[in-house]
Image (cartoon, rainbow over all chains, first blue to last red; front, side):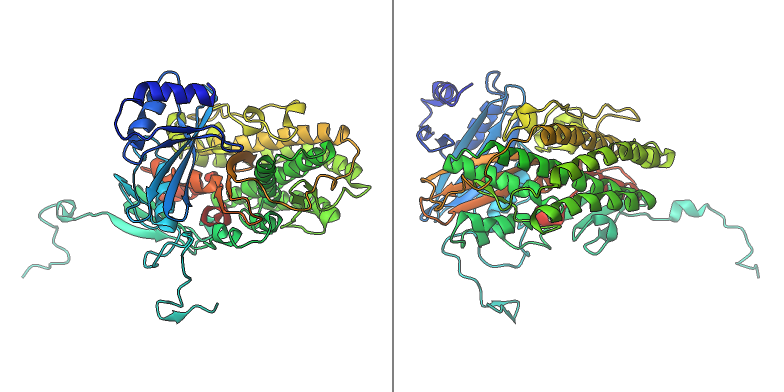
Length: 161
Length: 386
């Protein structure tokens, strides 16, 4: 299926759900993407995996992005049986960055979401084991945020730069 | 007074013995974890009940570094250092992503040279994987043979760009150097030399009875679990999924060559075992030689630097491009805000994703088999931790 076909199938199914925030962005240079609201991502993900026509059984990549003012989570989906792909995107305000976890749909999201939590401070609701993965557990702050300040001290040791 | 030492016990001591599970750490300083990986394992005697991997000991926040570059080309040396045993494949993935973002068409000669380098690097990387896997199981000799042959590939790289491990060879739009005049005959010589060596490795290690006994029944990964965990590369193919990005999501000029995707068939035990992962790597080396022979025979003439852009400022937008590295799907997600500095680069490392499945496949194994399972995933911590 092409991006347009998947987008119209989704809007057929979810178009009437209030606050779904379904918004196709086909004009994005290179990869088109589909915006979904943070409260409905789990529902949409479950539909995309289980639906006969879409069958997105493979979550290639999940990335956090700091958009200065809001944080985004980008899902790169692929279907092994149908051989088509889709990019989903969720945007949340920095003040309350909570996104539903899709760990129950694709297990691979477990580590990717922990990474986004670690480096961006995005909170994934429903994640079974949300703790830092790459940084030490006592690290403060989230380094990939654009406003991150490198700490002067770590555990009483001066950071040399 | 009875002698308490010689008197027979009235009840069996077995009933009063208490057993409990124990938590032990394997790593971070452990030779068989292939780097600084710590596995927290819960054991019941010799049986592994649960495995919790702890990573991040080699974390350098490569993604943060990229956001401070003044140019997209400057990222390439950092990309080299991610998965340091297959630097060419990392560069390949990054330049494919960046070129897709910039919408650059590179000359045919560049694509051919990239494929040649990537396949040579795949053989070199698999040689390390296979050799060190032998050491994990207790076979030391194949390792020496593997390194002897890997040396010849590194010599070819050194001849081309001066570096043996971290090349900075593939640039966005082109290459840092053209091939030296005697590269093609020497690479052909290597192919002819290497082909019979694969059989030698197979006789020495793959079909060795002890090796088969250690690996053929352990670490079985069912295909549906592998897909749900988004495993890729030899890890997924060993589970019987016929899937290779070089063929199924084509990039560069791979569609011009005739070759086959190696898939695990479960010849020695259940499909998706450690042995299947090993044999898939062995077969992939054969296929890489096949691609190399074809690519070397039809390499076109041309200028390798004609398409390198003078000024790299992609339009605002984002791209996710993925390529088949020796370990699996290596993807780069790049966001551009229209300036010369990358706004966000995320590397989707295959090792990172493949490692996350370990707690599924290692449950119920013996501690010694855990070593075999970790080795068969073939992780490089430089890329897992980035």
